[in-house]
Image (cartoon, rainbow, N blue to C red):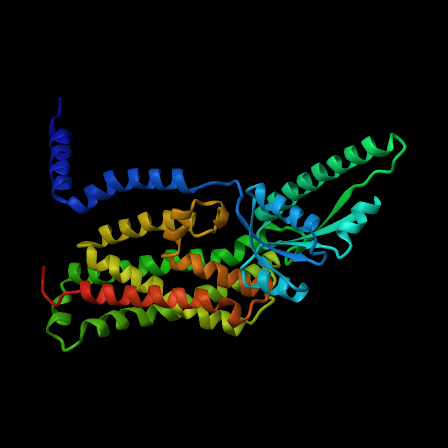
Length: 375
């Protein structure tokens, strides 16, 4: 039997054993990702941020709002004084659902008149709409049944029914088209894939080609080198972003409600953050292959934990805290807020501040990692 294939296989294993970074990525990262995703990914939408517009302000109206919270599907994050405040809360992403209780809610129940409450849902996330509407409808139906049984017990079989009617109202995406939700998110996902991968191989490519020595003997500072590596790819990122938005508009009829200029301006921070992250990977890797492997391993948690595929509110709190360190998490809120809900700069200022902080940290770390010495 020819032993040469086995000799080559043994030689390959020995080389792999010496490459500790690749070996660690193959053995440790899959286990870490399994534990992380198995714990964090949950398609059941719970703890939906909800504001209450209580025009009745009675014990009965407060009891209805608390009953909504007790289901575990709604997290009451504040009160609204009018529909303008509801619009601001939904547009800024502070809330996904608004419960509107009419002014004569309690008196209507007392007199046995049908009473209607309104549930306003942010339709830019179709998964949230179905869960929020169905749970509220079940709660209202159960409450109506209880009231009807009590009244029948007091007045007899001929007594009129006393139902509470739920009026669902979907804003921003009333047709619940999935493309309206997915395509804006793809802007962030595709930019992350390409920007991180392009720059992850930058320093590694310099090292493999032997041109790193030229950078070492040059008067270029570390921060200048990092910025110089980032700037050329920013233009590429804008070209990709433009193509995705055009295709989304022409092919999928995705609306653009907000300011396109503001979207491009805020996207600069996101693109730069991903390029800085790719440069950080390149300072860790010794070869372009290792840099590409790091990029691939980063993409999976980035997509799954950012809220692109699964509702952010469905994840456990520790996973939500971890996702706040991902630039894509904040950019998804920005791009969907501008394109679908017409969010303004004030609505998105907190997301911009978070991305700017991530960018500053990544640029600093990448600069410190780069050493003007040959390894």
